[in-house]
Image (cartoon, rainbow, N blue to C red; front, side):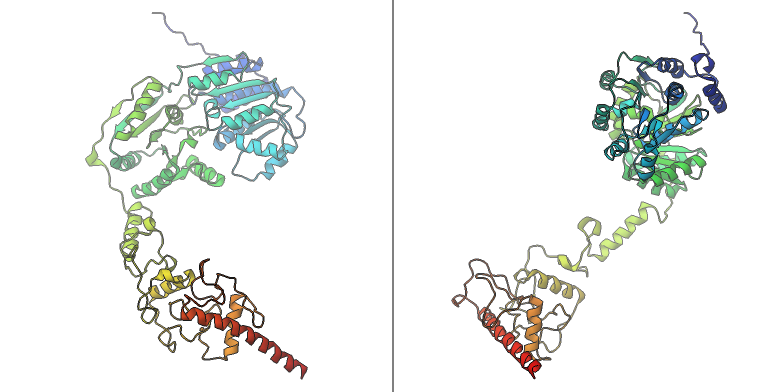
Length: 589
């Protein structure tokens, strides 16, 4: 078998300018990676490139260095324009690429701008108005800026899709197509990613013209320097096992959760194992995401719990361990997740906690990477117990039990917050669904009344008073409605008006009581005229009359209280006329 000879090529042999070579030397790199050896010369020639390489192998420098050299000898970009457009799926990856451009291009007289959502758009608009040679952007914010006329695409010469497989999937393809429709037809297209499914590869070929396909390792493969392992445990033992793994290492650990809520919850639970953790996901503001990442890189927190937003774009030096608390739904995301460790030639470890429901996902991952992931044994008896803290879910459950017992065995979380408006008792009394509610003593028209017979506002206040244990007001004649004008027929006992005064007219002149009641109803009837519409009662108390109700002048079928209310309405018109006449005489005198 012939012996394999490894050829070491320096950056000097790739055709880069002296200023770029000096910048690369300042970073400490001397030998280009396989993807850099093949991609840099092709990009310098102006060819379209579709490159696939493992994570952590220097793909960013593979397109950043040749783009800087190609733009260095050209005129400055005009206002509102850019010459090279680099699109990324995440804000973190966009910021990382911008950092690489600043590092490698520090000796070049080129302007670069990074734009993404979650931050103030005004500084981005101001920067684009001056023009830039390189623009790094996420698709959503890029389209927003274009709609605000802060950017034109007619001068774009180079288009880069970093993490091209994610950019061309169903999550971004619509925005990408909108951007492509705005770009010049003649341009250089560069697509870089660690994974390319056959469908995405076919779609990517349609964007390029005579593209050079570069595969420096078996497709969708993982880095050999990463040690992989699987723990098969039931779902209830995942958290204790994770706590044990984190307690046994002093290194920083990146933990992946499937959902945003799961990431937040995991941070709280890890506090019970004396582990300092922070969460990063799409629901966090950009300031929160930036702070969490900065605290993790500085060592302020040991664990960063992330969703797949961190599977692409996080470049953390000397990250020793990645843990998949939940396996990803998409097998390709596994390659990107574990690629956060073992970068730039370093070694790393990737462990996955797999329950019975994750078996199919595990088989899909092993089929993709074309290898079996070794199984690791775990001693369940050695798993630590979570310490009870104020932040743990255990105390949350205890508080929930207390709330449930104080609400008559009904949890607020399950049934909503009880209050008077819903008729739910606050004293732990079970609500009788579908049964007639008992009225208070002396409150009925025929002995008992259902609460459904009362208008909604009165029924709501009646429930509130019953829940508070209010007693009937004294002097209200057993809370009956007889003899009180404008309140007949509701069968709900005495209640206060909107002004806070009792409705009884015993403590004030009758004409003043009539004025207050009519003011609350919002009408001023003329003398001898009833403003009520046919078939509809206008007095506040009582049930609204339907279309089948008796019309004016027809007392047949009406109750005594309804007839009394109609008579009261006509009397009120006369009172208004008498009041106007009396006031007129006073002013005339």
